[in-house]
Image (tube, rainbow, N blue to C red; front, side):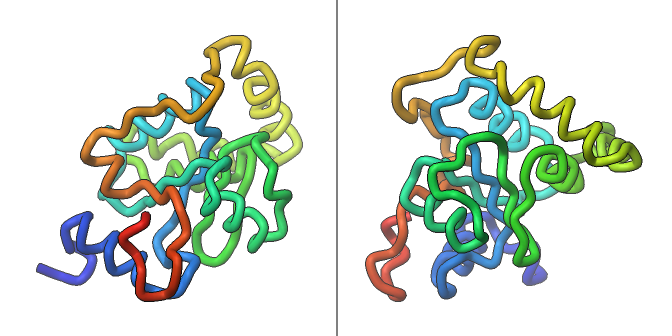
Length: 166
């Protein structure tokens, strides 16, 4: 078994035992948004390999990651994908996320040929109406199955040796 073929729980444990923030790509999503919750489930079903960690924007870990990447810790305007030391938002996040999906979903990356202002305009149309169109909860309501639970970051470690709180 190669290093990249480690079971998800072993990779997650290794990522979380490293200094914060984790080295694995992290998808931050609006934990009260039904569309965002469905998007996470979609990614879990269609990803190429289990490479992503997940975190709600509203969690302590999510706010910390946003702040560390120069974003407002109260930001809930879109998905945020943190990978390769960079935070991507709006259409850039969605297109970068597509590289983690199996075909035909990975082909969505072809939209990066469109100018970013156009892509972001289209993204914003859905993002601004997502609660009205898809609904929302008053608090985080996604009931994680075993696949998501193993990869969900919900809190920061109390100290560098404590990774069990995530």
